[in-house]
Image (tube, rainbow, N blue to C red; front, side, top):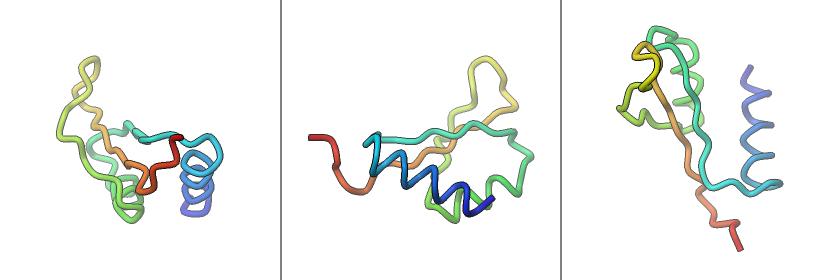
Length: 67
């Protein structure tokens, strides 16, 4: 799963040049939380409005590729 996450992050930031990646996951899914945190994703501290059991983590592009 780590390799897939690396590829997705690289593609999102360097190929399609998104500014931020958001990941929604179940609040009890500790394995996914640990994986996202390894890649410097941060908890937005806002529960999902439609499903309060989901939490949102996000990662902002450290390099401004938007030109």
